Image 1 (cartoon, rainbow, N blue to C red):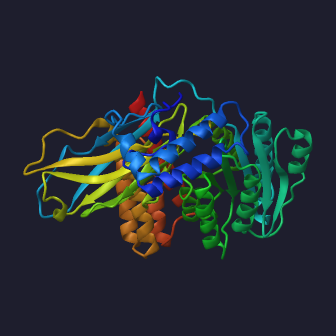
Image 2: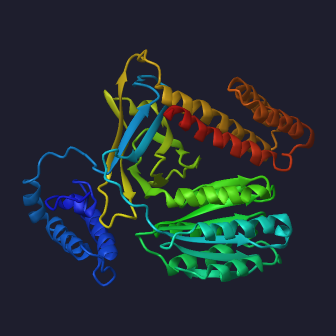
Length: 493
């Protein structure tokens, strides 16, 4: 859907109250993407000139003021994306104690938006080939990588990096590759050495950067079965760097020995998540599922930018869909993608202090949603996100929306296992067992008998052995996380 040439703010993809620094940054980002030296697609030179014109007007305070006077009222309407907000409570109460408020935000493509083609991919598989991968695990990884190659479209860039204590580029980043030759190279992979994840990630990033293009979905999929030692901080710093280039990293852990907290941290820094593969035979299904999601991208990234409000703390944030996972709470939160058939849903927990309740209305959050659509050459106008509640002397009698109740019910299960993990880490084994018993009771009430049984067995194991069983912690963590995604699907039925 074309942008009206009269709306310079929409052309640059900024709000009307954007600062001069925000306007300057938006111009350089758009100009870099559309500069005639890099783009020769029909119409993109005209778009570049339009962006230049918008910047010339908005970068001059005097011309901007004159231009603003000609604009109609700002209705805050985004023609590509819509959003809905649901609160756990209609108002806050004047109390001398902290109060919790939960907010569910849904972001999706507008139904009336003309079909935007899915963007081409630039994908690198980073595969652990250390000695612990020998046998069925490596065989299944090879088969999955070959299946991935066979799923590629002509416009997709693909590469494969294998790593242990040193990396090797098995399939260099390329278009229109000799698939038979590359499949043969994958089949020849042999296990050796120890696990050093940074080595693999760094090599994978180099391959993705060879084909780095804002009009593509640029992504790394890391598969490993083990711990890395001594390079965790370097890996996290690399993840933060590539996030600035809109490169995502998905972590996939095979078996029971890998570090789920570490993989979650790497992935969440880029707006992605980690997955648990309990059995090697599931590797191929999970990779196929991931490829379909990447190939079905509508918006490749959504970022929430906000300023902390006095007396209000964003205590916790969790993405429910399209991939469940905790979100890193920071002034620029990477929320992940919007898919063609799967909106982005995330839940925020706010803690409101009594000092913030002096006025009749409280602002929980004042920020904006910045959306990147790789298949669209021009910037997407951001969405203003203001979350406010009235402050009254009494609580309103209306119950929370059903959507929020369902999400909270499932999130409670996930957070119970989080608390059990915390108690085990500090040696409070009886407390950890109680959390798992409570989790089992809630699971049974929701019809999740098998997972409830797993939680009870794990509670008994922790009491006896003062530790989690092999894989027990990951099974409970990732299965309760999956329930959150199921709750979203129930809401949409």
